[in-house]
Image 1 (cartoon, one colour):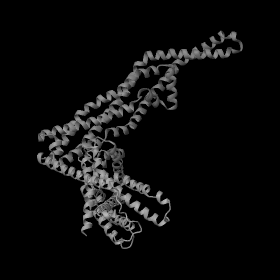
Image 2 (cartoon, helix red, strand yellow):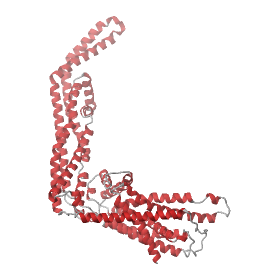
Image 3 (tube, helix red, strand yellow):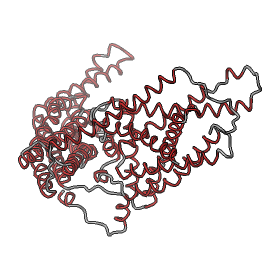
Image 4 (tube, chains in turn purple, green):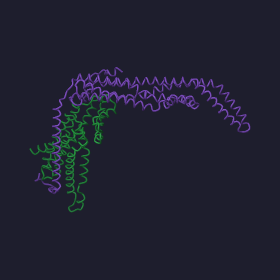
Amino acid sequence: MQNERTILPQERYRHPNEKIFWKFFWGTVVVLLCITIFLAIFRWWQDRTEPEVELDPTLIEILIMEAAEKADDSVRSDVKLRLDRVYAPVYEAIPDYASFHYSVLGEYTELTSALLGGMANTLHDQLYNGFDQRYLEAAEKIDQKYAEAFSDQLAKLIAAKTGSSPDQTLGPLTKTILEDAKNRVKFDASIVAAAATGVGVMKATMAVAAKKLTTKIAAKAVAKAAAKGAAKIGGAGTGLATGTLLCAWSGPFAAACGVAGAVVGWLAVDTAVVNLDEYFNRDEFEADLRNIINKDREKKTKFLEALLSQKSCNTATEKNDFTLKGVADENSLPAKTRPPCHAEN
Amino acid sequence: MFGAVRKLGLAAIAFIFPLYLWRELYPLTEWSVLALLPLVAMIFWTMQKNAAAIYRAKLNVALRAGSPLSNLLTGRLSSGLLALGFVTAALPVLSWQALSSTPVVIAGIFALCLVAGATSLVNQAWLAHHLHPPFSRTTGMAIGTCVAAIVFVPILAWINWSYVEYPGEIRDVSFWEAMQFGMNELPARRGWIAELLAVFYAAETAKLWLVLQYKSSTWVMALFCLEAALVAFIVAKVFVVLTEFVGRITEKGEL
């Protein structure tokens, strides 16, 4: 290369610091080499001192299935407890909603909502305020608790079979299968994800509940209107007549004064009727609401329990790693039947 | 011949050691990033030297003798920026590949490196008869990189297609869960390196998830493999640069 013609001046000049640079450069290489050798020896020593045990794949499968079942059992009771907490504010909101329902303002708000078709929203806002978030948080907790329970149960079962901790003595193949199972617990049949989809279903349930309530409110409103009609007309008429008499001195304003009297009379009678209605029917109304919410809670409990079963089943079913070539080959084969996990639920 | 083999051997050591250390130490500590520093230094220094030499050669032709501009237009800044840009782009890709590649892919990449280095040296030797340095060097490097990468892209794509195994869980999860699943490969301690690498892991898993949604089309899956194999260009370039680095430090007169 030195004999080559060049259009550049020869780059033979060397900076004094270059020597230092090379010393440090090669020094670093030597240090890295030493660390690599040390790591290699350390690993070899570890392998030598701690003989690894590979468990029989069938045994691992059985252990995973047992751990999944036990985790399912331990978390199942938790579902009801968590939903109790999720629904507690809903039940607590019933008396407040009943008070609102048995007020003049509530009566007219509900009538307007029923007329405009926004009853579900009114009901949701008043009773199920913050429910979605609480419900999804509960689902997330159930997911986490299942993962923890599964890991604990698996560790216990393996320790019982091998008499040791799974992290120290198990061979790489066994560890990989176990890690895969743990990953399945984390990512397969996520309860949160399914519950999030279920929120839409829940809103549909709310709409059904609201529809029932709307029917009741409408029926009550008609009955009340019929019952109150005569009294109200009388009250308003009395109000108007009394108003007109009392306002007679006001000359040209007597008519307006009379209208105000009628409104006051109407509302006074309305308040009296609403209070009477509350006295006789409030307990029944609250019981009806409680019934609707109970049914909703039952549905949610069953839904979450079904998700848990699905998760447990998916955990116990090994998902084999795949290559894209394998996927392409699958395409040319006839479609498989659905796995048993889906058939069960 | 022996000189070329020695260069390739030393370049292989300079390439493998830092990446091996990084791969082994990253699950344990964030300090593992220090293992990559020598690699960064070697790539940056060589790239900067090469870019500066080309710049000066062009300037030598373009600038009149005695022009005061020669003091200003040294090429240090532009060559430094060029080298920095390459290192910034190549290092995350290399470090991610080192962490995530399976042994069979690593074997393929190693073969690519050797072919790229050898092709580059052969080209440089041949071009030395036709071009002036530093053009003979840099052109030889560029041709070596491209030829090796073009040859190895289909090979790596085939390896990805036939031998790289993906976790079965990804077939049944949602898009966001797939991304989370990919990021789950990173150590639980997280940290700034993990945040950087998470982008690669998440993107790779997201791509795989999308591909699996169109699994009825073999072409989509083949494209995924081909895209994954494009890393061959970066790896080949880095190895050729390291071969050049070894050449520069072993043939001291050429510095």
